[in-house]
Every structure is written in C-alpha cells, then in structure tokens.
Length: 352
Ligand SMILES: [Zn+2]
Ligand SMILES: [Zn+2]
Image (cartoon, rainbow, N blue to C red; front, side, top):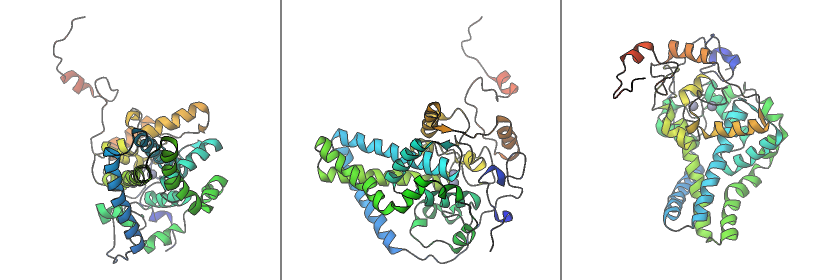
C-alpha cells in the first residue's frame, strides 16, 4: 500500500494537522491484526541475560559497589537518558529545536552510551510511532498490550505494515547530518565502547573498583535501567494517566514515568503537540529535566529555534478534545474558574 495522508493516525509535524487546534481531520483509530508472532530467539536470549545481569548489578549497586561507582552509574543514567530524550527524541525525531554542532556531538555521544540503536534508526521508528500510532505500522503498537509495547516488540519480527508504510517516511533531514551518518556507519564499533567498555574501565582505573562491580553496576544495571525507563513511555504512558488534551488517544499524562524518563511522561500532551520541545506545558519543568537541559544550552546559544505551542491553541484543544482533567497548578492559576474562587473556604483569614 502506498503511503498517503489518509493513512495517518497521529500528527508528527505541524504540517500533518488539519484543524486550527492542530488535530488530524479524521479521528485516530486503534487496531492490531492477529498475525502470529515470529520470535527472534537471539534477542530473547540477549534480553534475558541482560535482565538477569542487571538484577545482580542492582544488588551490587546497593550492597557492594563503592559510592563513586554508584554516583558514576547515576551520572551515566542521566547522560544516556538525555541522549535519548534531548537527542534522538526531541531534536532528531521531532525537529522540535535546532542544535549547533558541539551540542549535537555531545548528544550523539550520550546517545551511543544509551545503546538504543543509532539515533537515525531510533528517530525513524519514533516517527512511525507518531504517524501511525496504535496501528500495525507503529513499531510498539500499544493496542497489542502492555508487554508488547514495553519489550515484546523487540523480541519478534517487525510487522510488514511497518516496512511498507515506512517507505514513505522522509528522513532526508537526518541523513543530511554528517554527525548522525558517522554514528550509524561506525555504530557497531562505537556502541560497545560507549555503553560497556568505558563504563567498566573508568571505575576500575580511576577509583580502584573491582571488575565485577564496575561491569554489572555501571554497564549492565545502568543500561537495563534506562532501557526500561524508556520503554515505560511506550507501555505505561500509553495505558495509565489522564488525557487532558485529547481523550481519543491512548497516550496519557503519567507523572511517575515523567520523573524517571527526565520529563517524557507528559505523553498525552506530547502526542497532541509532538513538535513542542518541552513535550509539556510550561510549569512542569521540575519533572522535566530535559527541558531544563535544552534551556541551559539555549542560553549558550547552542540550542535555538525551540518550537512551542501557544496557550490559545492548547486551551482550544483542551476544551474541544480533552477529558476534563486539565490541571491547575494551584491557587491563583489564570485558568481557575471564578466560581471555584468564590466557592473556596479560607480558614484563619487575616484581615487586611
Ligand atoms: Zn507514544
Ligand atoms: Zn515523540
């Protein structure tokens, strides 16, 4: 089937929107066929080993490793997380802001530590996830269930729809970047060095950690941890949470996921307005470390052309398609209705 606009099941860029409040002209559908799964045993064995090793690493993290190793593992978690959230996701998949080459180099290094495939491949899968959300052309189609959208999609052969509709996907902007081409070309050399070798050597040589602690804590435990956090955005945040912006789609506002995924859990907002570099409305930055990171580089001038969505468009959308849970941050919020202000009871008022 040739890809065409009527196949779209979600917006990716502003150009996909067909209504003034940035929605598709046709409602999103949810669909999965009953095609039998073809297991990829190599991946099943590798992921099983990774998770066993990570459990052991988690034990060593708590009871055996030096404190320097634990802090180092935490720093690697944040760095590799940002390589996904600020890099592969907000910069490359969504083009929600632009970055000068020094920041792109930093992000591509962080991204390689994360080992979730090259940023180019990650961005390709993710553009499919937004354009064909909750259909068989979505790599981690959440209508197939929690397990499939979490890890199962990596354990079976890809659905033919993904390949077929993927042919129509424009990735020319990504292939135009020599930094991304370099990462993809040398990925099988760079990734093991960044994700496993460097995290093991640093604790051993800089503060005399044992080889076992260094490998299982800073490499395996840290890698599996950020991997599962990323997957929770596809599984938990497509299942549990409020839908203040669009109640017709699965993605939801999930604060726990936002906390661990450095701000990527405001998923109902994100699927409604994917080109917003904040992936959330203003005011959520304390759970949105990635936005603070991009803002910091914005001050340096290395991040620029950050795109966001006007409050008016957000409000129109909330009114038209939201589920009525749109939050107020507290007393004095400009969106607080007058009747709620009048009805509020003040205890121990001070006359002045
Ligand atoms: Zn999603
Ligand atoms: Zn996205």
